Amino acid sequence: MKFSNLLFVMGVALFASCKDDDNSTPSGATILKYDSDNVTGPLLAAGEHELAVRFPASTLAEHVGKKLTEMQVFVGSVPQAIIIKVYTQGNSSTPGQQIYQGSVAGTSTAGQWNNYKITPAIEITGEDLWLGVYVEHAVQQQSIGCDAGPRKTNGDWLFSGADQAWLTYQERTNEAVNWNIRGKVE
Image (cartoon, rainbow, N blue to C red; front, side, top):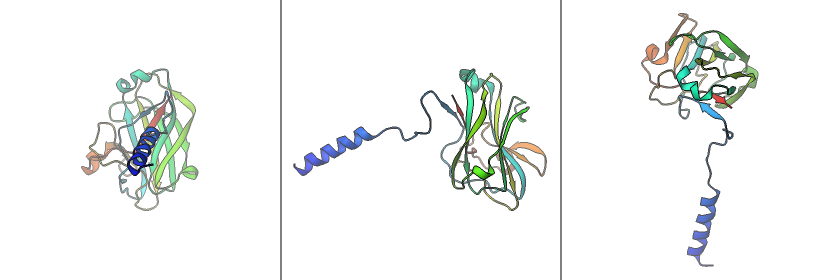
């Protein structure tokens, strides 16, 4: 076989084998997110923090009747405590009632995406949902990942145990990023 024919056959074979690189989203599932690929993570002081993303009712309208089945979080360094939380509608700057909590410290792996099942799954009812990750640090560290920005509204909420307030990360630091926190809806 001529070399040029061999290259053509190999090119066709490679093209035919290409497919979507995101195999983590099964057919019929949707990933709720504001972020893009992980780039780094915020350097948070020792203490208690909660990082969250808010999905307003308007962004969930097409998912009413489906269920939140999983949270996906990029974990940098595993903190001494890590708990995933889901809240219902509060207002535009504070989550409402907590409807789910699960400690995932023993199942978290540093430097990669971690998938945490929500059991039982949470029905999407048409209210806002806040997806949060509570972390506790003994020392300053980067525990939860973020993208490079630009910041999207509701993609960077941060509660600090030091001041007991929910503010955006941009309000706290003037940095424009989005947390690597996602929700899978099926």
